[in-house]
Image 1: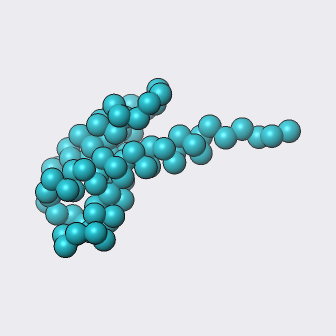
Image 2: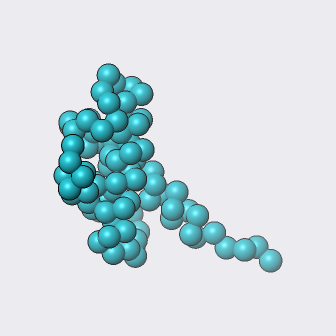
Length: 87
């Protein structure tokens, strides 16, 4: 898969993950793209563990895995940024 296609695919996965996740995520288009690309790697790795595909293959399970991975990354990033010091 070409790098441009991977970036566009990451942007779509990031946009879907932000639309599905409840609450307000204050991030721009570039951070959404980065979220989607990282989620694509995480989701692609998880899908590759279950199915007989490679991490960087382009298929329907890869899109679902990318969105799930982006949701997981978004949840972890949101929980890390919402921590407050207990004093």
